[in-house]
Amino acid sequence: MNKNKPEFWLRGKVADVPNLLQPAAHALLQSREEVEEYMKDFPEKLLWENPAGRASVGFHLQHLTGVIDRMLTYAEAEKLSDAQFQYLKNEGKPDEGISLEFLVQQFQKKVNEAIEFLKNTPENILTEYRPVGRKEFPSTVIGLLFHAAEHSQRHIGQLLVTVSVLKEKEEF
Image 1 (cartoon, rainbow, N blue to C red):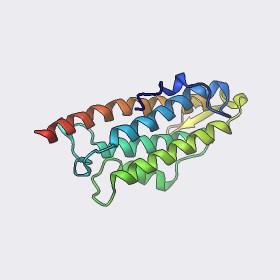
Image 2 (cartoon, rainbow, N blue to C red; image 1 turned 45 degrees about the vertical axis):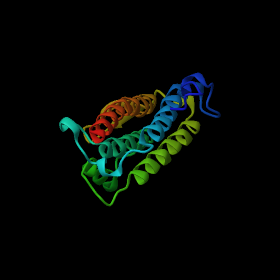
Image 3 (cartoon, rainbow, N blue to C red; image 1 turned 180 degrees about the vertical axis):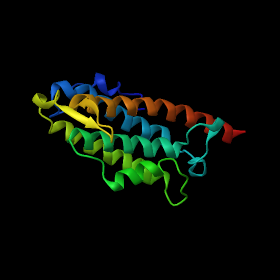
Image 4 (cartoon, rainbow, N blue to C red; image 1 turned 120 degrees about the vertical axis):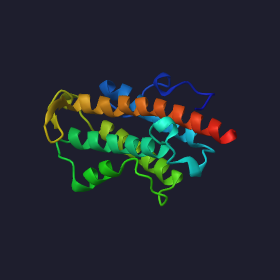
């Protein structure tokens, strides 16, 4: 994290994002910043390690990107594509062909896409019904956008713990 700056929610409004969506924008931007910080100098060889049987750094990075993508799809009142289902199926499967840099860039791009989505979401549709998944669980546009943001923050916390455990293990 940039130690010279406060967290995103204390930096003021995100330009062009509707007022009711500011908390989601702040959380997503905070997640992007923290991923960049936590992944600095992270050893590539540890990307798919599962310390204590827990999810790998690679999984968290893929999942962060995938959840945002899926929540934006549902917020648009669309169903997931075959490619999205395949991505979900492959989250966390070790793939030596996928670099840490690539996963971080994909997450950054997805957060940027989400911020654009927020900017283009009128406040008057936030309470509109949106079905989620094959079982069509009930949600709303704001529920999906909030979930994308808070779920990202939750996985950032898990990512931090995983990174710190793996880095400590690497030092021994």
